[in-house]
Image (tube, rainbow, N blue to C red; front, side, top):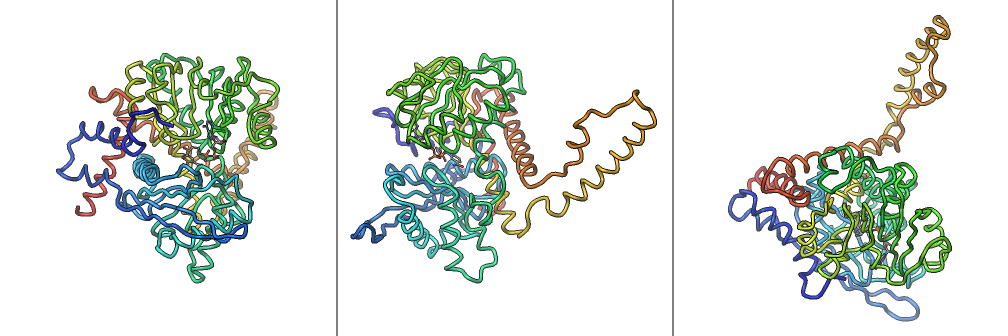
Length: 476
Ligand code: NAD
């Protein structure tokens, strides 16, 4: 995807890392220790399918074990390679540190096009890949905990969890070996939507700070802002849907693998998603202009650009022509190091990937804690909370009767106030809090230091400081 003569994805991440550490005062050698990937395991395995043995190549890379378990998704795509997996593992280290999820960074990938295989074939491939990783402790509740990424979802995570359980029949914490599982297999409410929800919470927090909006030349609120989204998969779909339905944003462009849709009046995200599910792409969707040259729509006028598909899509080949005032990196590494520099000079504000898409790992953290504690969030406190609220409502109703028209409760107050928080409400509250606090830690550095002029460098500074503190505590 990247433009010719640009560094690889991993080199790009390293360049951004180097820019940040140049502004820090780390002990000699620690910078190198943090930057390098500790280990990458490559496995080639055969699965008997369609009358012959098919060979697959997979990776699991561990970037940093300053905290364990290490955490990071498993990606299914033909383009998966060692460089990409290592870049993504490094980003996981920084991401977890930034949002205070107590994990080191890891990532996995399998060179496979999931669309080429039936469900039962994919199950055999996934179970075999999981077997290879489990027997080397590269999937393990206390050492290495994968999650979904591009091309994988709840279904694959359920197969992996079951494979681990079969191989570790007495491990009481077996379910915590992977996150992003379906609810009925040890998952948590709100995990599927978490990364997109996190993008929404990140934007809401950005729009709470007039100074930050001004840096991008924006003002007001999310209401009416014109948004272009690339990739209507798990992350892009949820982000676009919530921004449209709950914040009044207008989704003017949707870019997919087979072209892009554009409409000045706004696209109906739910309808487009339905069309993609039925037809496999956006081609033929009736209520919009379709262009086969999808990537060109990245360059259209808009307030907010959300690349939510893959890395390297904004590169030296198109950076100069990008018109969005604000880019929020829902995907990992969508902006190359070269493009980052061009955009910074142009004054485009970029909310960086390590923060923007951290909603997934944040809710994965909640799921892992739920699995280890063997109890659903909210189960102990919810009814007690409701009972205490009932006391207040009873008292207000007594005053209501006493004071008559002078004091009348609004009609839906009772219903809203009485409802105790269930798991979904608690997960959303924990995610919102995480996204707000992490954003504030970045903007403090962004506005507080003269030598820091962008959010990405600020994010690296915050997270590298935290990783360095862990290493120091380990006695390294
Ligand atoms: P997904 O497979 O659900 O969706 C990806 C979407 O992008 C698909 O709809 C696909 O058709 C589309 N796409 C593929 N090639 C494209 C192209 N050339 N142009 C436009 N669209 C294209 O994947 P996802 O889980 O939504 O992940 C997307 C990005 O978000 C990745 O970079 C991933 O690493 C990152 N991410 C995902 C999660 C998560 O929880 N799933 C968490 C953090 C980061």
